[in-house]
Length: 553
Image (cartoon, rainbow, N blue to C red; front, side):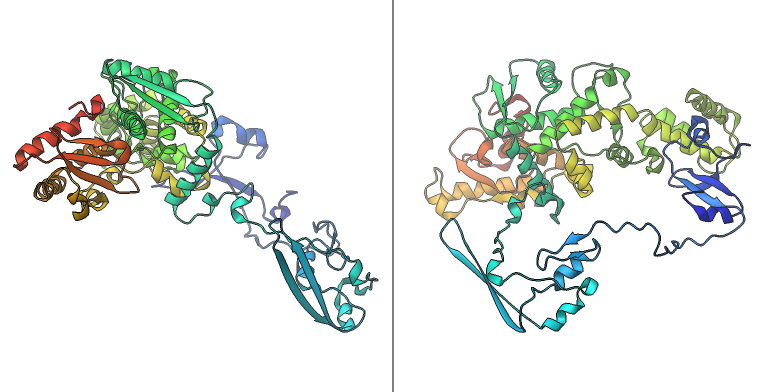
C-alpha cells in the first residue's frame, strides 16, 4: 500500500498470474489465504508462480493509472547544482544543458568579440577556430537567478584545448553494437575478439589420419574437453600423414567437427551411436541421454560451435526455435513449441491424443495417464485436457533438456561470443541458422566462381579448347548436383562447405585427377577428359575423399 497508495481506494485487490502456453494464454486468480497475500506465500512452490509476472487487480473500483502530480514541496530528485564552464554560474542539474546551449560569454560593452583558439598539433600544423558572438549587456539579465558576476578580462581567460576525437579510437564502445547489418556486426565483433587474443598462447590441434575414425574423434573431443582455455587465441591445426598445411587444414578440421555434431559421432558412448542433437530438421533438440549430460558433452558441443563461429566456419543448423528461445534467456512457458519438437515418436503420439475435442477411449486415457503420472502430472479429465496437453509437450521438449541447455549456454560463454548474441539478437540466426539456409544451390556456387579468362589461357598448360570443354563440364555438374553434392564440392574446393566472401577460382591443368588448393580457393581440373561421364565419375570420387584428408582420391 505504501508503494501503490491508490490501492487503498480500490476496495481490496487480488493477484493474478499467466497460465497456459502461447496458444492458449489467459490470466487466473492466485488463491488468497486467510491472512491475505504475503511474500512467503507467494514464493511457496505450491503456488506455482516462480518467475512469472504477477498482476494486481482492484476488486471494487477502476483506478486512475495516471501518475499523481507532485507538489513543489515534494522531495523531487533534481540532482546537484552544476557550474557552467563558460560563464562560471551554477545552475540546477536539470537546467544546465539548456543553459550551456544558449550561454554567451559576457563582455564589458556591446559589440563583437572574436575569440581565436589556436592549438599546435604534434605534426606542426595548426587549427584555427573563430567564433563571433554578438550580444548586449541587457541580455545578461535573462540568466537564472537574475544575478551579475564580475568577469575577468579576455586575455586572462584560459584558452580551451582543441581535441579531435576519432570514433574508431574511443574506448569502451565498439562499432559492432550499432552496425545495421548483422553479418557485418558479427564480422566486426569476431575481428575484435581475435585481435585482442592474437598474442595469446597458440592452440594446437593434431589429428593422425592413420588412426581409425573413432580415434580421430577421440582426439577432437579431448581437445575440446580441456578446461580454462582461451578459445580466441590463434589456432594451429596439423594433419599427421598428410603434407597439407595452411588455412585449408584449419577449414578441414572445422568441417569435420561440425559434421560430427550434425550427423553424430561414431564413438558409441551410448547404444546406437553418439548423437548430441536429435529430431527432425529445424526441430532438433539436445539428446536426453544421462551419460552425455553427466560427461559435459553439451559444454563441449557449444565450445565447438562457438570456436567454429569465431573462425567463420560452419554452423549448426536446424535447432528447434523453442530450444533457441530458452537458450538465450527466454521463459519456457513463453516458448512456441511444435509437436515435431518432440523426438520420441511414442510420446509424441500419446500427446497428440489430447488434441481436439473427441472423446477419449479407455485405452487412450490409460496411455495419457501413464505418461502424465511418470512426469508428476495429474490424470486427464474433461476440464484439464488442454492444460495437460500444454504441460506434457512443455516437459517433453524443454523440461527434459533444461540441464543440457544450461551446458550449451556455458560453452558459448567460454568462447567469448555471448555478448554478441545477447546484445545483437539479430546475429543468432547466423550461429544457429535454419537447415534450409545452410544448403548450397547451383546459382549460389556459380555466382562465386571466377572462370578462366582468355589472357590466362595463353599461359595455360592446356589448349583453349580443352579449357572451355572442362569448364563446361563443371558448369553442367554444378547445375545438376543436389544440395548435398554441392556442399561436398565446396568442401573439397576450399576445406569446408561455407561459401567464401571472395570468389572460387578454377584452372585447367595437366594431371590425372581433380585436385584443389584449399588455401587459395582453387579447383584444378585435368584437361584430358573428352566425355562428361568420365569427368563426373572422377569428380564425384574426388569430392567424397574429403573424409580422409587432402589429395587422397
